[in-house]
Image (cartoon, rainbow, N blue to C red; front, side):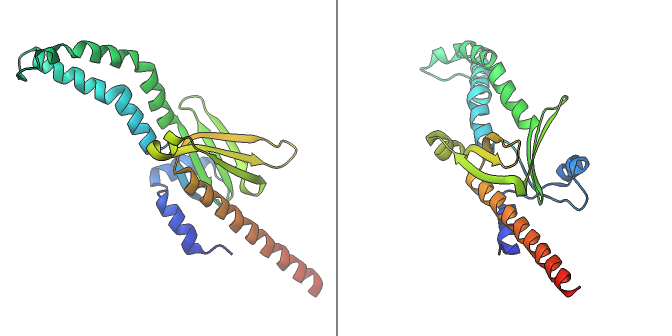
Length: 208
C-alpha cells in the first residue's frame, strides 16, 4: 500500500502546482479531480540550450560592441571589438532554434492528476491528450548520455490499454525517472482504492 508521506515527497520534488496552474487546468478537470503535478520540458535542458543559442552569443556581441565604440579596451586583444559581427550573425541564425525552444517551454504542459495524465500542447490552437491512470500498462524512460548527465531530462514512453491501445511519447521532460515513479505510485494508489471499493460492494452483497 502506498503511503501518503511517500507520495507527498514525490510531489514536492516535482514542485506542487501553483495557484495559476490550478486555475488554468480547472476547466479540464472532472468533479473531485485534483492536480498533483504540473511540469514541462526540463529546466536544465531549456536553460543550457537557450544559453547556447541566444544568451552567450548575445553577450559576446554586446560586450564586443562596447569595445568597438570605445567604452572600454582590453590591451593586447584588439580583435575583440570585431566579435560583435559573428555574434550577431549567430543570434540571427539561431532565431528559429531558440524561438522553437521558447514556444515549447510556454506551450507544452504535462499535468498529472489523481485520475489522469494530461498532455496539453499549443498556445492559440490547442491539442489535449488524456491517458487515464487505470489504462496505463507500461511506462518507459529513454535517456541519451547527454540527456541523463547534462540536461537532466529524458523521453517518457507511456503505453495504454484498450481497443485504441497507443503509445504516447513525451520528449525532454525534466527528471523523467522521478516522474515515472510518481506516475506509477499514483496508478498503484488508484488501483488500491478501486480494489477497496470492490471489496466493500462484495461485502454489502453478501450481507444483503
